[in-house]
Image 1: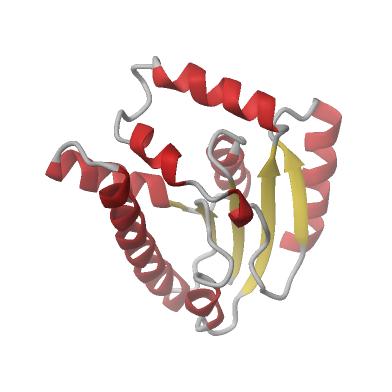
Image 2 (image 1 turned 120 degrees about the vertical axis):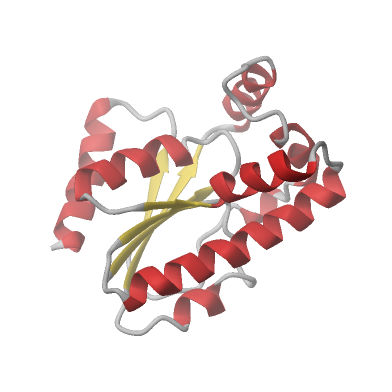
Length: 173
């Protein structure tokens, strides 16, 4: 089984890239925010502390889904702001799994501009606003896992994106 783990800080292009990879490889997308948004819809508005609790719960659910996917031998694309030192164990426990990591990054000015633009976007889930206050920039790193570690600029041009896709295609085989 193969997993491509797409990580990075908010507003760096994680979900856009993860969706493209899921379509490219015909693999299911398991996204932490989809779980968290469902939880927020179920309980209503949350503050920053509760948002972090919901993130933790969402990751627990995501890893449970991934374990079932792995048991079925199905490849997957993971999307989330994974935390080094906290999330490796759930991935190491999977048998016969190859993992490639892609971290999405942007310069901080552009990332903050994207966050500001999202604040007024009705297509964005309103519950993510509180989460921004609790983001730790030190989480902008790879997990301690074997396998390729690739970096993607969330505002990359077509040639840079194509180079990343070629690297992933070689690994995916």
